[in-house]
Length: 156
Length: 118
Image (cartoon, rainbow over all chains, first blue to last red; front, side, top):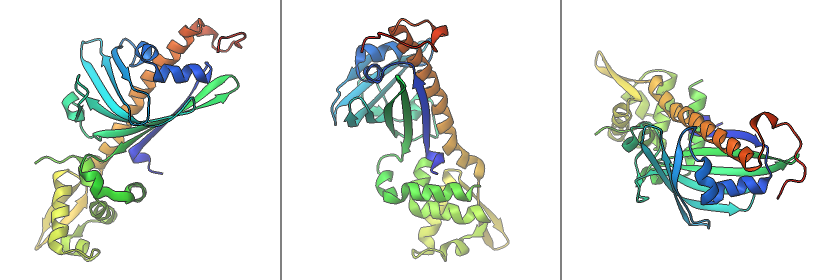
């Protein structure tokens, strides 16, 4: 029940799982959809192997660009993709969310995507978790989620 | 130094302190009796929580009382909400793109797909 620090979204896509996988993992596909409506994605570099990096750019209608980068942690084609997610500059160096005027969010996040076949469609579950920043994560140790549960409990 | 809420709650002792003072306001002494570390160490943690806006400290007579500020804690869930919106918008784009790839008009998403290329 660590709801305060993670986000889970489930969506069903009317497309075969293989295609949904490719949309996530092939730059030519990825560039076609990454970003909200009216955004474009001019850059997508994907080094699809565990430890490999990606770099993506989202171009807003007002001309602002939002770069993000991260490392693939787990790749099980075509079922599961786990990667870290940070804001970045255009060279792919991770930067703080405050650079983009966003505060109160973790510097690094972990995204887990699972794809399941369901009646010819694809059920996608996306989990997005915050990780405490930098050296603080060492201090946090293992008790992070447990304590978060406690914290959430106490806020009821 | 301005500290953000995530740094503040990254530490287990500080989360425990928050947990204690979220039940009711406590003075520093009452907080520190719950821990093995020194009162001074606890005071440092409380100060960090204060800098992050997670607690406020009020002088009452000779005692300083520490109280949780729930509105600041909500920031932790706010980023989740921001991301929910962003992901929803992105996944709408993905949905649209997948349909386009399969040459399916938006309105026909209930039709069974026969003979589709794998």
